[in-house]
Image 1 (cartoon, each protein chain N blue to C red):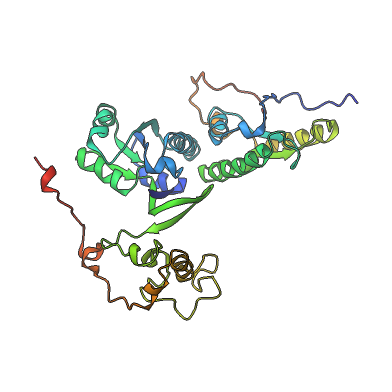
Image 2: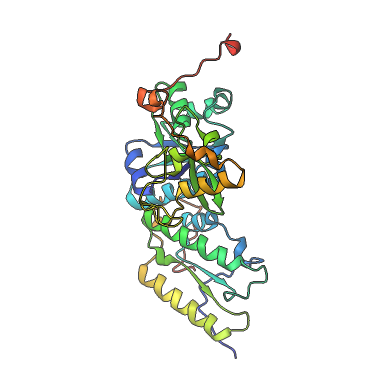
Length: 126
Length: 222
């Protein structure tokens, strides 16, 4: 059961995906992240009843605004995975990294001034 | 409260073209409650504009600020120094707020970031509905507290029309027929006889048709 997921991601833990706000996604992309994958519990099994359903709506709203802003909405995606589902977890990360790699780096990094020290440059960060 | 919704980002970018230092100004009153122009929406729209600016090759420098109430000079003054520093203001207030800011800063371009929609209430979580048309001559006492001017698609004062389907409006089948609601409400409060009275034409001279309305209270003037 030692599955390997791509090493160019950083996992940020939250108490529940319902904790995530639209502002978080906007700031993430503004700061140069190439992609954000929100992994919530399966629908119907949220410990907080509807946290993952709230997250789903917020992610959809953020995708709409990102798209209007000129970023491909596929850079932000939400999936529902059970806590014990290791293989699907690895697969969605691989799929997300492949999608983001195809889209290329966040254009905000490419167009940032050369002396900008606020954005870390990595090949692909999800 | 006044209910509004945001303009799309491409429209805002087009409106703001030609300006560099832009202040996105939120309002802490009605548009905060209807989730259109409060502190959080200022943050989201500012982020979106910064992203759109970089992607589109614009040169926006955006700052965020939210004041308690944009339609009140007392609160506008709190933001005066900041506003003076910027080339333009994108107001996320209602139409009254935008104009109040524009009147106070006569030489500063002030743009509306929202489409002000109506006077309404939160009907369900995330859903607002119009309740008042601000017609200037309230008739709610005659209709059990349900406004036919706002909620009947045909603004009928002697309804219902022939298109009422069960309890649905024929113009908006997703909405209830206002006259069905009026009937049920008058029955519940024991005033069903009101429906036998024929309502005469409404006085529209006090509505918006006569141009911008002004109310003067001499007892409060200095």
